[in-house]
Image (cartoon, rainbow, N blue to C red; front, top):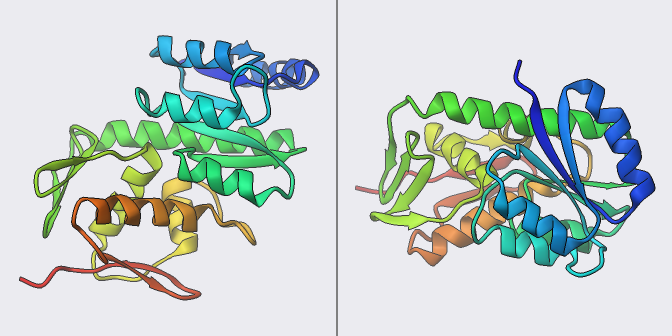
Length: 232
């Protein structure tokens, strides 16, 4: 099994030392940056990073600034490390393109599970590249290119949003529960009070609407979501 590359961007040196000590024996090669500027430089200059762990509060550039600039050039999976109980940080991070979040202080085993889920998702996406395109009304999802289009126009999606749209398109007209979305898209069970699925759906819905594909995703309150099949 190939060694996976992690980039930790966090100014808490005691925490990063602990993470390196804990994660390295699990087969990870780890780089660390202790401010947002150095972290952004490392994240944008390398193509071999599998997952980025990104703190919110840091000197030079905070985590949101790093994520905003990173998403302009790369879609590397990002787990935001947020202050416990601060829903604003979590929501904002997901809105800006984070793939997942974990509140501090966190359990190291939980962090390891989240990292593995993102890496597994990327590996499954690589396998999916050999599969055919999905087409529904104005939407076309190219699995070989890992891109989505509306009426031929590129839809800029994060890796999580791409997998979410793929799942909805593959089951168009069917109710997909939040629990199923969490397992297939995030690679983990849905936790109580976890709003990440809602935010990813909201981001995808907004991007579709901006390209003229309004109201394609319907919410079934308390149950899940349905991608509507356009009328011929």
